[in-house]
Length: 130
Image 1: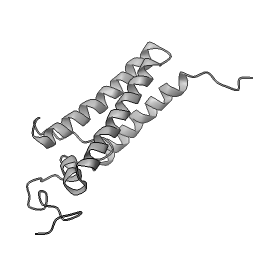
Image 2: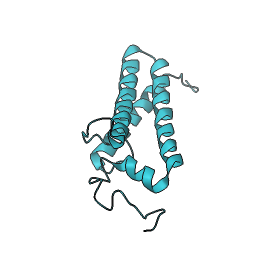
Image 3: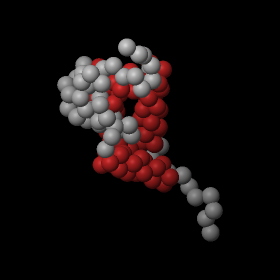
Image 4: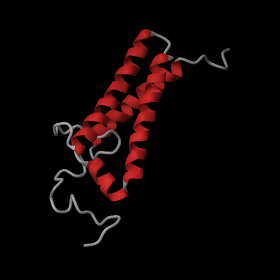
């Protein structure tokens, strides 16, 4: 038996059935290792922290509520997917944002990021006002 990149063990023997959607974090951990799996978690923590910062510095309360809701969505999806991959939470089919295979999930996450960028852009004053 060979070990290494693209020489999968868990998902090639049928232990992880929906490997491109539900258990993508297990495939990342198996194929790329602990460092890359930790980097994926770190990127999600940075994304959620930036969304909370946008919520704190929003111009009005509505923008703040929307931004903290988006941060909550990303947090819940990250915790649920990684928790079900590790066997700590029940398997529900929640996708890992920006990583799981699926067009509707990716489109929804990109729309959420666009809303966050819009809230963030409206909090600053314009530099060139005539």
